[in-house]
Amino acid sequence: MSQPNEGQDRLDYNETADITEVHASISREHAEPQAGTMPIPMWLGVLCAGALCWAGAYIGVFHGGFSSKIYNEYESAPSAFFPIPGGQQGGGEVAELPLLALGEKIYGNTCAACHLPSGMGSSAVPALAGSEWVDGSEYGEKRLVTLVLKGLQGPVSVKGGTFNGQMPSWESRTNREIAAVLTYVRQSWGNKGTGEYAEAQIKAAKKEFMSQAGAWKIEQIKNIPVDAKLEGAAPKADAPKADAPKTAEQKTDAPKSAEPAPGAGSFDIAASITAGKTVYMQSCMACHQITGQGVPGAFPTLAGTEFVNGDQRRLVAIVLKGIQGPIKVNGAVFATGMPNPELTFPILKDDKNVADVLNYVRNSFTNKNDAPITPEFVSKCRKEFADHAAQWTEQELLNFPPAK
Ligand code: HEC
Ligand code: HEC
Image 1: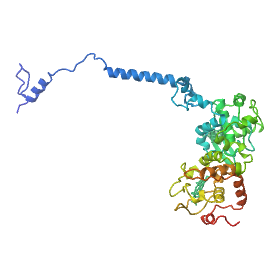
Image 2: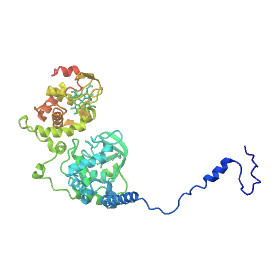
Image 3: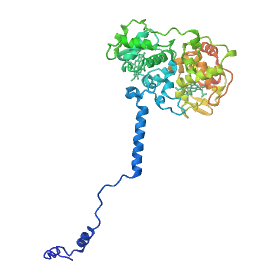
Image 4: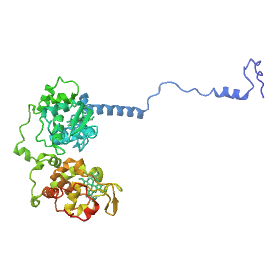
């Protein structure tokens, strides 16, 4: 073993006898790492160039004019620069949507978050369905437009409930968008609005209330005369326009649906089924699911059940009043209870909507029933069961027709 001082007097080598140190100094003699310019590998250069080109093209196509509307699918139109293959979704075509359909879209991704897709609101947000500010005693064109343009804050009473929230301003939206969403809101969920808002009306309102900063208080809105109209209304929808082909959704929501429906003989069941799908999505889907299969243990299926495919009167009765207590459906027992649907979904107060949704249910989820349920039939049942306030029990449904 070496002594710590052993090598100190061997000045010529200045080394110790420790063999490991000798090895270490030898291994330090190995080649130094190289320094100097080395070309970037070809593949890396190509990759970077590719990424840059892609980024440039992306900005070129999707810059949206570098305006805030870039996130607005109705206004930024990538398809204009860059035809998206098979892209019916292109902004250009969306802009061509009929006003009501555009309104439905905007409602869905703007208002529905708070006012809900059903327009029924919640305990914190007032309903738009049947609201006096949209459709009732306090409704005025000018009031509604400016309320939505500027927003609303502070206490407001809607349909007997008091709300004290904050409704944002929508003024940054285009005139066409506001016109569309208000047209939709006024015509949906049983609201009785007719015709369309014109872009010129929204423009007029934006101008008239330009000086109003911040959201309205409801007292301020009340200072606007309730029957105040906005300039620039579109000419009243004339006959040919009213007959123009409409989508099924429009048919359900449009007040024209209230017109006397044809008798069963000439009843257009296909149209009724299409219209019924919309009603289903609004008023049954939450429980019975989009597939009609329900949720095991909670909500029964609507596929192939005797209640759906059996006696029409009983089926109408179920939707008019709901069900309470346990009931056996396709061999499984459910006891959740089905609250009277029309209490939650006022659209079901319209006989046509009830007929449509049942024609849809009776012809979906593998069900097939050619015999239609007509609005007249629903109306007859409604009168017949007018005195029956409670939800049906299973026994009553099995004994159908119930004693009057
Ligand atoms: C962030 C949630 C929110 C969004 C999004 C929203 N609202 Fe509201 N809205 C409210 C609240 C909260 C009130 C009640 C305000 C108050 O208490 O003063 C209200 C009130 C209203 C009212 C008056 C009261 C009534 O129920 O009739 C109308 C009309 C209305 N909103 C329409 C719309 C429309 C149209 C849209 C979509 C463009 C929309 N709202 C989007 C929260 C919202
Ligand atoms: C809130 C949830 C809910 C909604 C909304 C609802 N249902 Fe039901 N439905 C139920 C439940 C739960 C039952 C089983 C009854 C029970 O538990 O007593 C049921 C039973 C039924 C039945 C009888 C059993 C069967 O499956 O054949 C029919 C028919 C029916 N619902 C149709 C409808 C239609 C049509 C709508 C829309 C207009 C609707 N329901 C909306 C929860 C709901």
